[in-house]
Amino acid sequence: MTLENETVKVLFFGDIVGKPGRLAVRDFLAEYKAENPDTFVIANVENASHGFGLTPKNYNDLLEYGINCMTSGNHIWDKKEIFTYIDTADKLVRPINYPKGTKGEGARIIDFNGIKIGVINALGRVFMAPLDSQWESVKEEIKRIKEITPIVVVDFHAEATAEKICFGRFCSELGVSAFFGTHTHVQTADEKILNNMAYITDAGFCGAAEGVIGMDYSTSLNRFLTCMPERYDVADSETVQVCAVEVEINVNCGHAVAIKRIFCSRNEKEKEKNDEV
Image (cartoon, rainbow, N blue to C red; front, side, top):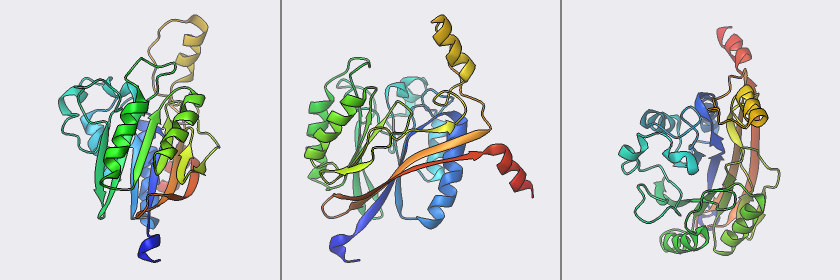
């Protein structure tokens, strides 16, 4: 491969939900990294600690598993500890369109094997809490990052499919390298290269496969039947799933040259039996 065509591989995990999601990602990465050691790994972690928020312990655990950068969303503030450590968590990104003065960073440039990779996180505004415009804040941040590196990755945490599609095309016209939708926890089958940008409407989630988007079925059912605000709990499931997206990006121009959607599931009971043999 010539220097002109040199690429970097980026692996993005959809929302990690609770302990089942954390351990599923840990086990997946143990195998994946053995064959793909030079892959830059990003994961959305806003649901990583018992389904809501992120604790310092889980942040450090995920770093040890091989995750290089963590994005988030509207649930990033659910664990009170976040306010005491987010400013020092230099691999964690919160949505950029929170008001000026909000703790944490909405984008980071991370040096990975001598390659600078910009990562931006943003929240949608359709069916979500009102925030500053992601359109202007992300546009300005892309411009800033591209003065330093051609590689820009966006995690857009949003509810409405139409908003994700429209914002994705908007980002592609600004020279973004890869765009991953998150939040709905249901992986879409529309991965593509759009204006030299790798795109998927939603990357899906990592966690208990037999619940309701990673959460307990009974609790979810009761909420729908009674409309009472019962507290969600992470599902207890024998089967866990991993949803991810792998892209390759040209390091010189920042163009995506390949995208692959990943979905795999595993029965934990069967794994335990095999480990004992």
